[in-house]
Structure formats: structure tokens, C-alpha cells
Image (tube, rainbow, N blue to C red; front, side, top):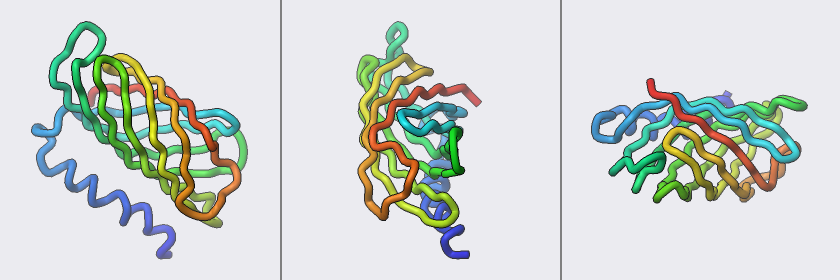
Length: 152
């Protein structure tokens, strides 16, 4: 019972904090994505983006925060509950994610620093999963992903 409550306990505080003043934080979006190297994952979540200045297709500076869920598509089910933050400067992005993965028999936590590039609504990301817990079969060491943001 406690294991199943961990995702709610980990991600509820940032969600509550983000909802306190959404106008100050920026634009609320539906975020969808695909991640894959040796295992393939679909991602869906909610993000807040704040842009300082829009220049052409790229933002001069922007930052964002997201809560999302990843689901493994190609073999046994693995779910990941992710909290992430990023900063963009003229189309180049740097960020990090904290992900709690579970196959419902075990769980582990990964820290994923990411670098990427893209436009305001689409990003191509490259990341590395740093293990902070026990091994769980089926997780990518390196991560390549594409994320899209759609206004709510």
C-alpha cells in the first residue's frame, strides 16, 4: 500500500505549489512525448512554461516545469512518474528530471540531466539516466526524446 502511495507523495507538493499562482508562472500546457533507445516510452503530462521574450521561432529565454507519466510501449509494463525543470536560451535547452520507475514488483529512482534544442512547442532532448536506487530491467541508460507542448 505504501509503495503505491509513493508517487502521490513525491509529486503532490510540486503540483500544489504550481497551482497556487498559475498566472505568475506562465502558460499551462499538455505535454506529450516519445523516448527511446533500447526501450520505447510514451509520455503524457502537464507543464508550465514562462517565456521572457519571443524572437522568431525561438525564445530569447524561457523556463518550464512539468509533471508527467512515462509508459513503456515495447515489452513488459514499466511506468515512470517524472518531475522536470528546464531552461531555454535561443533554442538550446538544459534541464533535469527526477523519475520514479516501477514495474509494480519493484521501484527505482533515476536522475536525468538533459540537453536539447527546439522551437517554442517542440523539443529534441538527449539525456542520461543516473541510477539513484536499485537496478530495474528495461530502463534506458541513454535517452533520446521528442516532446511537444500544446496550450490548454
